[in-house]
View (cartoon, rainbow, N blue to C red):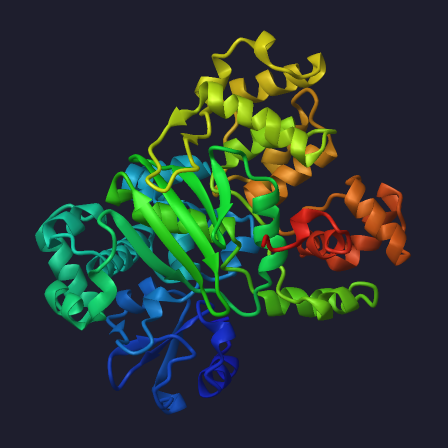
Length: 489
């Protein structure tokens, strides 16, 4: 979008927050860059240039605006609905792969050379993987500076910097303030939090309907790993350097996020996975406008716009739970998962009580005795085959997965049919066009709305909803009285 100068100028002049994250405005006369909704008086069009990412603005020598904080805007929805190299790379960078494995590790996960990855990112995003990761480290550092009382030395290494000097130089370059100045400008109560607990605000593009999003997560919560308490969805997180517990509470203009981490180096990854879980980088206006073109879906969208796709913080965990949920009720699937958690999960300490374990790793599940599984024999084979492939690394699920290739690999596993593959594609891989024509709830909704109810006919009818069929699924599910469709009381 940043190449459409006229459209960008209109968005800036109208201070349209819907475009935050889509592009960034760099002002030639001041040397700063802003989000489109910046509250200051818009500059003259001739003084504006547009970039596709905050990292590209920094590469061009601009510093972040202190008023609108463009570094904290929602992520671009481009990386959520695409499956090409650049989109996969951006999702992996957000998940901290470059910080942990370097650019060669990123390229290996993508199946391309480092040169190809760098060239394509530069061409489309305006910055290479190192610059993008550096921008992410700067934002993590700012969060820790403003929301914790940690010493600056600890913050530097927790944010992923190799030295305190690099940390100081980067913060000054990006924000035109020293780390100490940033902390001094923060609200006085920002550092008065429980030790070890970070309280953050996760932004999103309005509208956001929390009913099906949190309703689904709460109704399918696995005891010990997830719970709904005091208006918040809480769960344990398995992270690269340790573990965490997160509480997510919906508010009209943000999601309140309370994080307790065993290692602060996991902050960036934890935030990225929470945003992915709640689909916070989606563009609901674009999705809903497209679905409204269908006269059957239009009333459903108008009734409760802004539905998101509830996703996951751990793709391997969700794949296991999808198998456990084959042809059984939501309650039965929770029971099966809870047994696995109690027997094979990693215990954690939750100061608030309620959460007891991390979900078992594929390696732990691959080592269990199949005879202890209270599952039919065919599903037991499906389960053991899946966890073995995940443990061996033959099957990799996550933010950087190639969607078509992963679908093919999943369909080749015994017991994996279209429903299982598509629900994993929708919630674990993040494919916004995944569709579930064989799902009982979808077929019931189709029948009640006068849509074709056979899978083949419904799939043909749903072609007009592409590339947002996963969102159409949410609106169709919402016609039912199932608990997944309602915000818990």
